Every structure is written in C-alpha cells, then in structure tokens.
Amino acid sequence: MEVVDAIPQNAAIMSKVGVTVAINSDDAEMARRLNQEAAKSIKYAGISEEDALKMVTLNPAIMLHVADRTGSVKVGKDADLVLWSDNPLSIYAKAEKTMVDGIIYFDRER
Image (cartoon, rainbow, N blue to C red; front, top):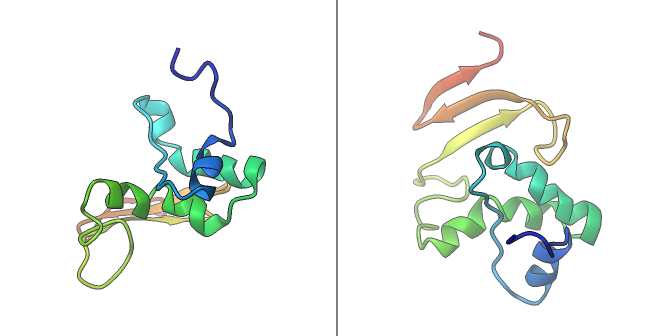
C-alpha cells in the first residue's frame, strides 16, 4: 500500500526543494538495482547524474551520520566498490568487479 500513490518524480521533487534524498528498498530484488531506481529521477524529472548517484551513495551516509567514513570515494574513507562495464545508471551496466575492504570478491574475468 505504501507505493500505491508513488510517482517516479518523487525523489527529484524532494531534492529540488532541499530535502536530502536517499533511495532504498526493503525488497531484496529492488535493493540490487538501486542505481537503476536512481536513474528514474534523471529520466522522469531531469535531475543530474551526480545528484542521482548521491541518492544511493553519499546521501544515505549523510542521513546515517557516517558520511565522514563512507558514502564517497576519498582517501581515508571505508569503501565497498563496484567497477561497472558502463555508466552505473544504465540498465546495460554489468558489475565487472566488486571490492569489499580492498578485497576483490567478484571478478567477471575470473
């Protein structure tokens, strides 16, 4: 019921009025594609790619008060990273490598 009245412009509307927006899901399948959920804000509401990516990286870290440790790639921060074959906001992007705490856990070539 919580999404009956949902619209794809919702995240962008809130962002444009100054709300820190994070895109998340309690559905395991959708949680694996949050990058594509963020891309909907570009397609349907004209938000920038940078702001869309922040909705699934830095903004959640800000909301959880851990942005000093995670949420962006900077020296000294903890980072779990995915190297994509294409723009991560594209439905055609495939995960090429996944790194957690500096260890490669997935490598498409292997």
